[in-house]
Image (cartoon, rainbow, N blue to C red):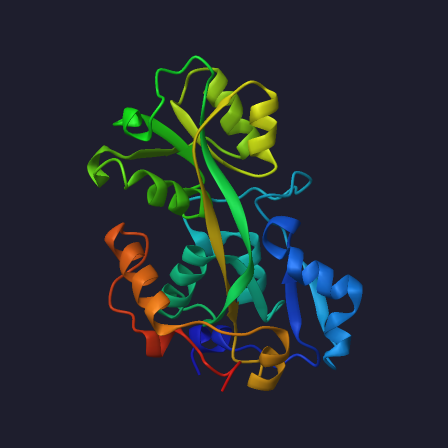
Amino acid sequence: MSVQQATRKPAVAKRPQVAIMNAVHDLPVLVARDEGFFKDEGLDIEFVTTPGMAQVTTSHFVKFDSVFDRPLDSTYNEGGIDQYRMCEWGIMKRAVEAAGAGLRERKIVALGASMSSFAIVVTRDSRAYEPEQLKDQPIAVTPNNGSHFTTLKMMEGFLTPEHIKTTNAGSMPKRLEALRRGEVAAVSLMEPWISVAQKQGLRILIESHSTRSEAAGDDLDGPTLAAMFRAHTRERFDDTYNWTVKWNMVVPGATYENTVDNRAWA
């Protein structure tokens, strides 16, 4: 067995190891844990705290050049967790590209139970009052993250791809600083940073939502997953995957059959 094969499927854990990051991504899981809903389903789960983008207290530095270098991915690849969730497009990229990178494989097993509000924000005195007025202007996002994908989704209704310019200005507080200094024309934010921006007198240009997906390794069986959540459809996969390929956010060539796993509701 090669080193790459060995890293793809670690030893089965005695208890399912489920990642929890923050309320942005994981509020339904946190509520179910605290209210005992998992125990009501007969589940004995180990909850593993992992760093996430929305945690202001995290000491981890997030590398933007590779999604698989992020702390949560490293924990999953090393067998420290078996199941996690993040933005729908982020899960899509990981499920499609992990095996090709020689990493522990994962499959899309459900849609997430929560959504996040996103907004593109400008300064109060910005000349942009419509999204199309940001043509060729830098919008600060987190690359390969929900803020990036949702920004593209919002802006492509107004501008063609070659005129939508995104850039990395760091965390959401740092993006707000960059906006106030005039280094970017607009920033992509999620709550609670949208409310922070409004309190600071900044102006919302357009708003949307970011959906979630759930990913899991082969270590979790169907009945266990079925007790945790339900459902993902072929049509939604096709639409979302083709959209991410169009924006060069994930490699082409994947199929529903090799990316989505139905064991949770089989």
